[in-house]
Image (cartoon, rainbow, N blue to C red; front, side, top):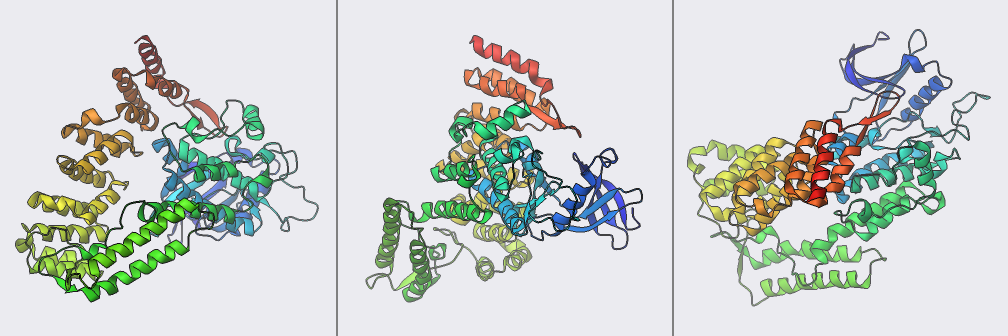
Length: 594
């Protein structure tokens, strides 16, 4: 195509054009190529708008925006644009699968999008179509939810300097452009828009990520536009009764959804600052604002037989910890309540009390240390010690390689297997880490209490890889047989985890270890009904809800019958659960009869 690009597949289609997977003929670099649909090329203004998209996106060079590298016109007038190819998950697909995300994860994704919008707004560009379909999540810089915003196809430039004098504007007053579910009130009625319209759409999307549904929904477009302009925003508890978010987070979202743009956030940067404050407050609360809870000592003070350093060295080690605590207290926003400030102060005082008791002049002359050793360490040989030393020096791959080379000596040594698990986990080799942890626990059950092991286990349960999840849940099931915390965590995952695979696998493991009667199956099956990968899977969830005999399932069954999906260039809505409508109605009638 155009002598430079070879089409190799189709990535997706939209109302304006098709996006192809392609490669540059000369350098074989993979890329995405967007081409207008032939049937829309002749519509007045479409070609100009496509050119505007290329111009707009070409001006936005930001890590959270899709990168455009070329733009051209074929013989016959067809226009194309060349963009970076993204290997990720559209936010729309993620919400279809998981229904809703945790509020922290939602804020994290929204912050990425806002960073892109802040940059675009500075360049004089309003996106005007912010929605889940235009956000894709890729793994970048170690972040699996690194969001990039796509499709500036209907962007409105503040400055139209690139348009020849006398050219009619493509977004004249009185023309409504955007997606009705996410459209700002002023945009809905063709009034002038600015960056604050994007912030409204972002807030609709954020509300949907947190609750599983947008704040306004209607079958008729006119009714939906009217709701944006006149209807009160529902409370999160009204849309998703089981979801709990901090009051300040809900207030932030509601501010973004104000009808008058003057009452919203006035810039993306202001919105980002509010998100950062909410996340910072949340991260501080479990560590410093927990009344009555003395702070824990750093892990490097855990006990290991025969490995000691002088108390003076420990004082030096803890000095930065104290300094950091004081700095965090000083950094508390001025808007914090007196109660919160008092709580933080008590936390810091408790820390100093621990230091005085543990390391005062009357304390021991020597104190134990080693970063990753458990509180009660089993006997271990020099190989385990050497590997632990490498791990402390930031050499996890070397530590793992060393222990593998000593396999015959450390195969039945529990502490060596524990260190091997830590090393693999630090190097992001999760399957190998879990296998080592499993061997360590089988050799010495007390190692299941190791704090770093439990932390790594929690992190791996949050992964998307089903193999990692299955291995981690098998270990959690073993721990749950005699550990109340592990038992509680397994039941929680089986009842309400947002990942379909994690939840269903956790339920199977919980049943195996005798915890099935503690699972909230109503909530779990309702989530299965929302997230099932196919209509047949969701029909199975209908059967399970019916078998429960709980009338509280009726609203979820009713909602499933109304579930729609958008198809085709004309964006027609069709029923996504056609295969289960009869079963769902019969289940509703059965539950009503009980």
